[in-house]
Image: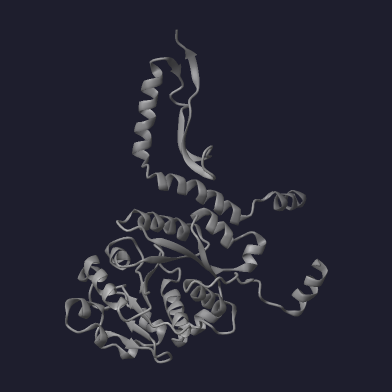
Length: 91
Length: 263
């Protein structure tokens, strides 16, 4: 067990970096000014649009506002990332 | 050309009043004519940090309501004859003053002073709106903590959203180099990277600040790291290009020895 603990110390992420990473993510959604209610509405609207064309896993659908590297400007910009698992493509 | 500067933070207790007292006193040391205005109506404190609490006759609300002239309410500092304090009212609240009245007052004071420093209350409500109304630029004080940085980010948003966009410069306060070295505190570069505004000062967590505040004597310019850090901020405000201090500062026997080995 002692061996495990020593191993953990080397593996542990510094709390300063944890704070920085948490803040960077949080501030993106803070700045985008999107409440959980609005996010839920966006999610439902996306489901309704895509439903017309394919069968998707509504439970597994996940959307979030995060950062992405901009292609035109230098630095990162806020982006809406949606992960939508498809069950079957309709014809 | 005179400048109206608001010292703000969003979160309380990060060092706005201490910063206002030290930056104001430092600018006076640089031979600028300075007035400090405590805009935290109901929670008056800048007078205490400046050691001028026994000299108050009139206050900010008296001036705004026309009970006295600004000259009558301003207290001359006991150390520097070119430094004045306009204290806040202790028995009134934030709604006693409007942003329009504050703007009119700061514009009037521009005639006489090089720098007008406003100590802003915590929060983003009317007290904050009053304080920023007449300001040209802001000093945004934060500590390397998640809550203070999040609130600072909100303030940046509000300063940019107003009718007149205000430039904000960052002061990272209470940095503990022992914790930074261990990786357990964000560095001033980390904070600047997150908030993405210009850094104008980095002040170490220094017990001399507590001692100076106890005594009602700003420590700017004194021979310790915090005193030097504040003086550097003042010089940068006046446009001078000053390199950032090495906050590791302590050059004891052991650190000198280890320094030799690092080379």
